[in-house]
Image (cartoon, rainbow, N blue to C red; front, top):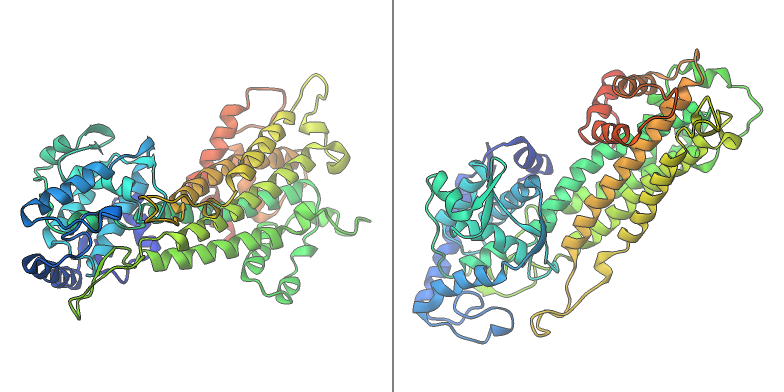
Length: 508
């Protein structure tokens, strides 16, 4: 059970809840903080003070005072009118992460929501009710208004939700779990949707997958190094020591561990070749920079998951309601755009290694890694696919945060587009998984041609793992299903775990 107090949630705990089914609940401190801020909102409502989102309209309607008997309708209408998302639904892990993050933010005690409303949100989470949330429609400022409104719809008994993979109405989902729809009180609708939790949830899932991707990229690079008879000299830790980027050092250590005891590398230790191409020699610098970007993303996400991104903020010590801009997603938007580039670069350099493996003039291996050139095409077209994917990534990597379109009659005249950046990061990541799958396919084939020489401990484990599901390409065959198998081998962490069982933990 993860206890939420608004201050101590970790990225690993988010993943446990989102993907591992771990349950979450408010801590005693969280409950106390929520109750204290709610008491202030109740007092504001009694005093008939004009406070944004409590007793006034929203956005450009902030100057419209709402009468007491219409405030419940105000909050319900907010959710209904803002649930305007389009496109495919977010994956269940992202939605579960967003629900957790919203509850944690509310637990910090600056949003003025009722305790029972937060508890209902957590009941949905713990009982496996996953609101159906369209992935398009947020500009990443004033919070993820449209996506989070779809989340809250289910709490009202409206909208749609997935239960055990089956899509049903929000009312059916609540009834099946024995839950009663909530009637929102003053400030509650705004408290539930005015935040960055959707983009942050996508970012947290991308962070988790990127950690695995960083390790898989090092494994693929090490296999290509072996197949191309490259040298380990460029990974000498003294090289990293005089530059001091932690990611570079981590990549160098990984490559040394992966290629340890390689008979292939030992066989050409004193050859006439002076140095390798950049796609091999500069793996620590390129992969390492991506690792450093991931570390930076983790720091930003770690702050955001324990932040209040609501407006106005209810200050528990003074009783003030202060309007500000914590809902603006710029911190997440910028770091997601940075992560997009970092992930895409892993694909760019991987495709270059694949091309080198397939070009007989560069590899000293059979053309396109086939024993029967001409009759067979071998792995020729796999490089086309990799080239297509990295080219697609070059479009997706354009910074979403560089754009802004005014909304709400120019009241909200600068927005972050952070949710778009986060979604693109996941799309780029999946493309790079396929690019790495193609490199692994080619590298394993190349190492086969070097037998009886054996690769290093880590690369041997990787090759064996691949060969358990993909046989050596002795003649042309249907390759698309095999690329899919390798994609899944990377994406589900199997490749990394099998290799780490031999090398010990690799650094991401």
